[in-house]
Each structure stands twice: as C-alpha cells, then as structure tokens.
Length: 150
Length: 284
Image (cartoon, rainbow over all chains, first blue to last red; front, side):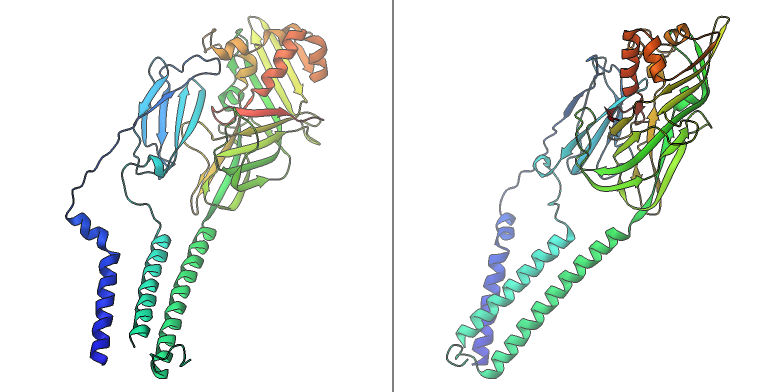
C-alpha cells in the first residue's frame, strides 16, 4: 500500500513539474526570432526666442549612471541632434543642451513599453515571491492528492 | 475529523498539518526578513548636501557691459531664505511652473545674507548632513528683504563702480522686490545634486548679473544684449559720479520703459547654472 501511494505521489509531482515548465520544453523545438528596434530620438534645441541653438553642446545621461555622461555630441546648425538610447537602461534619461551660457534640459522616460531588448527586469524580491508561490502551490497540490488517494 | 478526512489516519493527518504549518512559517519568515533588510539598507544610505550661491565671474571679477561700461563690484549682497532641495518626481519643468512634486526634500531654514562678489568660487550658504542618497534635481528658494546686516530692508544690493572713458560712477543700487524661485536641474559643466552614500553633493543658486547690464563680449544681437538694460540708464541718473538709490528712487528717476524693463530683468536674474527658473513675485 505504501509503495502504491509513493508511486502515485511521484507521478502526480512529475506531471505537475511537466505542466509547470511546459513552455520551456515547447520552445526548445520551436523557432526564435530576436529583434532590436533601433528607435532614435530626435531633439530640437531652441532659445526662448524660438531661434535654434545652433551647434549646441549635447550631453546625454543614462539612468543607471546619472553622474557620468552616457554620450556627448553637438547639435547641427538647426539645433537638431539625434541619438539611439540603450533601451535596456530603463528609467529617466536626461539630455542637456548648452551654448554660450545658455542651457536647457529635457527628461525622457524609457520604460517597459519602449524596452525592446534586455531581461525581464524583475527585482530579486519579486523573483523570490514568485518562487515561493510556486513551491507553496506544489506542496498544496501534493497534499491535496495525497489525502484523496488515501 | 474522521467523517470528513476519513482517508487519512490520525497520525498521518497530524504530520501533514505540521509540514504545512512549518512550510508556511518558513516562507513568511523569509519574506518578512527580506522586506525588512531591503528597507533598512535604503534608510541607512545617507550623504550630505551643500547649498551654494554663485554670482559667477561677472560678480567676482567684474565685466564690461553691453554699452561699454567697465563694471566691478565691491559687494553683491543677496538675502536668501526657505532654501529647499528636492528629489523631484517627475523632474520639475521651470517653463511650465507649478508645484514641485518630490520624494525627498532637504532644507535650510534661516535667512542668509550672501556676498556673491567675494572669493574665487561660489559662496557656501549652508550644508545639511545625513540626507537620503539620490538625485536632488530641483531647488526652490526665496529672495527676501533682510532684517539685519548690509542688505537690511532689501533683497539685492549692488555696490561697486563703473568706468567709461574719463567718467567713474560709484554705485549702490538696492532692490526690494521679494521673489519666489523654483527650478529644475542645474545645467553646467558637471551634473550637480547627486548624493551618494557618505559623499557630498552640491546645489547651486546662480545669479546672472549680465542679464541686467548686458555683456560686451557677447554679440550685440544676442538675446541677452537685446534684453539687457546696460549701464547707461544708471549713469544718466547719477549725481556727481555717485548713484545711491533704492527701488523707489529707480522708479522715480528712470524712464517708465527702462524701469519696467529693469523690473522684468530681475525675474531673469536667478538661474541654476545655465538653467532657467520659474520666478514669482512674493506679494508684500
């Protein structure tokens, strides 16, 4: 009787694990397309008068290292400057334009919807809660079936 | 128990209950401890934030106005109060104005009379220790009438001399319009206001005196010089090379258009580095 019970428990747990990880197994036999959309941001720097900030110095700061410029460049004669951010760096990007004592800045939020490459972005606490929930669910399921089969 | 859970014997049922209870206890403990340790780490991370006032080289070394007056300052007194640095979220847009929304704020409570013509560097107004780490990307301050000291009864006092050709004018010009200033991030050679653990960061209140007098080294058709008053209107109301005048005197002696322009220019005086500010009158 204990042998049967143990065997049934093992079968139930095995089935549960197969169901839990089935998407991974399915992907192992599928095709995969990866893409990176090189979306660029075009900026226009102007003075209060509406005149373009021709040849303005441009400094771009990424959210992961706000103290160090991510890149530097210069606007063209029409005050235009374009750049392609690293979309894996989610958060507030800051761009400054400076010329001859005049300055302006703009903040651009790059979040999940704009993130076209990179990891899931879950924090370790979120991952821990998810893992704990899965373990708890497995234990609960196993206990439920164990009771009925006895 | 037997009626409902009759498939398990009493011993097995107790064992299952114990396993269930212990597992739940372990999971809850882990989550609570994790949460506590995360909060503790954030609360412990502090640095310091220094507030400075900067008249730049225009105030410290003097300059040539747009109408070719060589101006030098003995003193540029400004009274500052209610100085607050913010970790603004969203970042504050001075062009839009409105309230600064923030997650953390640090303030200086006294009235400070600063002479921004002294020294070689920005003048330190005050420093606050043990402030939460983060980016202080907004600032607000008031320019108020002083209750004591060299700028008593005034907001801004310019003391110095201006020379052109063979003329020299000693001036003492006093302004008493109180202003509320709100600004976003400092714009300059380095990014300011980023407090890291155990380190000091700086927030700057900048004052652009060239906005009043213009700058000979800047092209005449630049917005700065097109808007500036220059020194000539002040020279024209001086008496025997002396100009000791307050706001009421300026209103009485300057032309209506020049006085109106001067009043507007005072609003463009405060900056954060090269970044503009939102400035409002404080109604007295």
